[in-house]
Image (cartoon, rainbow, N blue to C red; front, top):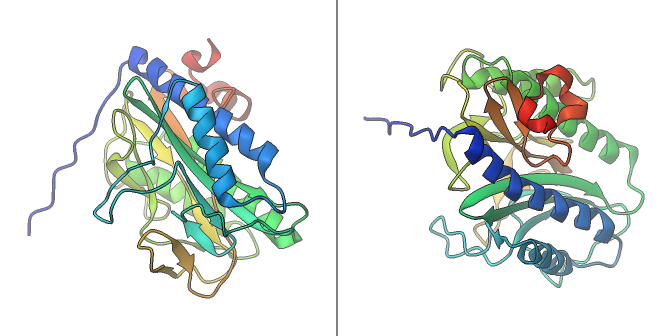
Length: 278
């Protein structure tokens, strides 16, 4: 059986600058989501706000109309609530309640270049374990991002994410199969980046590659199921899930977190590229 050869799109600094425009637009959507998420708000309302921000910023929603053989995706965001892990479709019937946890994934295209990032937000006051789950997911994200600066192979990043998740005493589950990906002139490009695995495997890392790094973890069993809509992925045991993501560029002199407002400088310090400091 033959394996498909990976096709990696390497970018120039000028192309990374173009991706940064899309990345900043995604960051604006996230800020709008932080302001809008509240008890009584439907996920359809969140989708309307997100699309308006994208179009007002001169972009096109990456997700709207995206087709993987299930028919075109009907919204501009994925709005996954509580036990929904990823890819949940916004609905006017899904109204947020106090204590919910919502993961919002969004992508934008500007001049042919994509930005893609996700956040997990509390709805009002949430249980301590929900807040801790979100913090653990964010910690794993930044562990993966930091590993990208020195990674020789793709799975060095996977291993860093897994190690960070496993460092927490609670014992969070890492969702299998789903993960990050290359990004550039398409939203999903090679390579596929799992959130677990042995280091030293996969694509050789070199400047010019851009990755969307996105851990997905659960409060309970990491096993998942696909809903009838063909898109929504949920935890089998009904446990809470969290999902966070950034698009990250590997430059000659460090990293540029394209979807972070500050380019990742505050978190990365000396690992941040000079491009992120411009």
